Length: 605
Picture 1 (cartoon, rainbow, N blue to C red):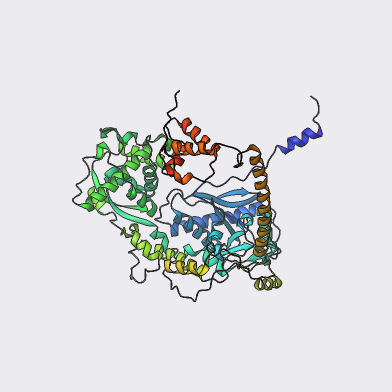
Picture 2 (picture 1 turned 90 degrees about the vertical axis):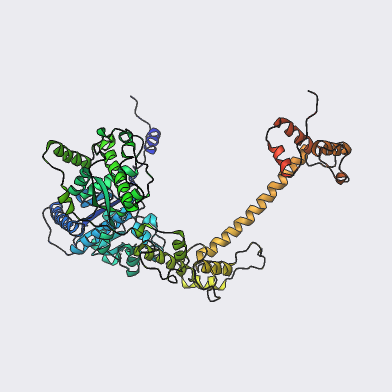
């Protein structure tokens, strides 16, 4: 085999591309804990072994903290877990959790990570989701201008419960380079002056955790449901079984529904019989998913539901029917057979069949918890939402439970307050909030303040009325629309002014190019005779063609006298009508828009 030439080798190299970093799946959060000692310590023989020892202690501490804070907690899809692994050649303690539709699970994990960094001073944590650095997204309004999403990787850390950001060496120039994980660890260890802690950024980033750990219990909802005794037994063994059952019900498909189509209930794992009413604990997201679904009762359940006369009993039975169907689909669907929770449930059911386990008696069930939470957090009417958005919630003196819940009201009020702050910000422009520009100088600011845009030649009809826009937005937000609010103006920065000047120059160049192109097109069309309106032609014949063919009137139209008619236009129009053969087409549509009747083709064929 002949050796490859240098040209072939270069081509072969050019076909290779670096393997991209795999993206996180949707609704996933990834986290890792790093051991970075801050105090100078004597050299150890095996640093890897020392690191693993410290991380093992953190892993045990995490298990104790989870047991303490999340004793009765139910995860929507996956639980928080930590495993010792290697990342970029460094031993770390990491994990990944799929939180499904329950965003609160994501913030529970952030709270756990903060608490772990508080207990272990040499532990630094990172956390991301499929959107990237979501903590920075929460604090977007308070971030420095140099911190763009493209360079944020490995710069955001949790330490001692604080949010720590790794700064660049020079903040006065625009930052474009990213840093690796190893470089970030080196900076944390050797350059502490490059670590930024901001109370304002931290307050915004951790705003959702303001009510933790109290809010953890509020992420769950308890309800009384009427279900078969076998289902009640499973849930009493492990309340977390409810989440996969709800998900199986919520994401059902025709294959999953097959066992429920039969009218004979003998083939079902959970027969609609031997009903008991018990208190069941859901995630709030899971309970909303069950309640919101319009699910007709299967044939085997039609005669098992009570009458709708007693609405409370019917709702309990309806919710229990949906839950039971979820368990049935979960255990019978082939795609779920390898899931650990499914295998656990099947082993418990086998113990029931063999007699190793027995179903609970009515007396035992009577001693179980009977908690039933208020469902007002599910009720959000359009009128209430509209009044909150307009800032009229206080005028109506609404209590916390009348509009969603207290957290929902507080979050919505915070959004309105942030928008109000933006409207009242003199430095904010039409393009968005004006962040502090680290690159501008005093001379740039003075130059911008002296330059005022010339609006004498502006088209007043097409101009943007800043004061009118501000007044309308204030009225929509329920704010006073007085003249005290200053008009919005562009941010004070040299770059936007240069950008406008550059766009104006480009606009002038484009205008001249368009004019030149128009002249060339006109010359080419005149060469074909299309635009020649003065060439000899039978004008009267053209008039008759228009009056007879287009207007359908053989007597002619006196309004056409004295006007130049383009014979080619009429000829093309008639040929287009002929080509339509009575169907819809461009020529017919044009005549219809002009309220002109379609001419008849009376020519002999």
